[in-house]
Image 1 (tube, helix red, strand yellow):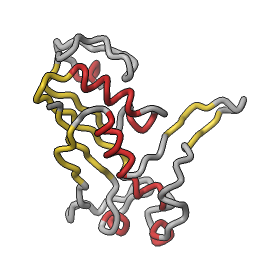
Image 2: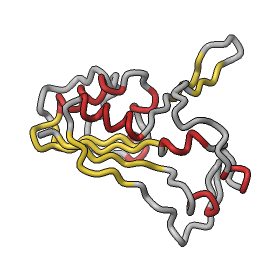
Image 3: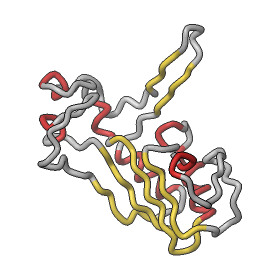
Image 4: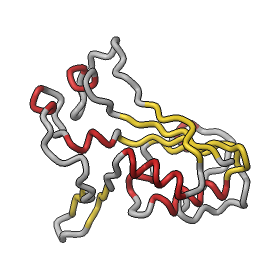
Length: 162
């Protein structure tokens, strides 16, 4: 996306658990549905983000709201019945024809996310659960006004390095 929109800022592709930046380099770091759901050890990533933040710096990240994992991916009434345990932390895995994992997403409860933040020596400043906007009548994937008005689709964690 950054290449498409252009700009003079440098782009870096790196392992989120091993960032190529000096300690205390940034005031703000953001991850929108990025690394955290896709790593088995989110504390490692959170500690690395803390390392590159200056004191007083913020890390804001969004993930699919953890409650979403308990419901089927259906936008209609069938998507309103719990079909799995919220506490089942079995990763979601898609495999190719040879049985190799090509997509892996790790489920964490809200409590897991909070404990991970604390374990990384970050402070949770806010947890935002955006409500479905009244103007949005769209339906896509498992989301619709029907579901969106009843359960949150996104959790946004605002963290600080003290």
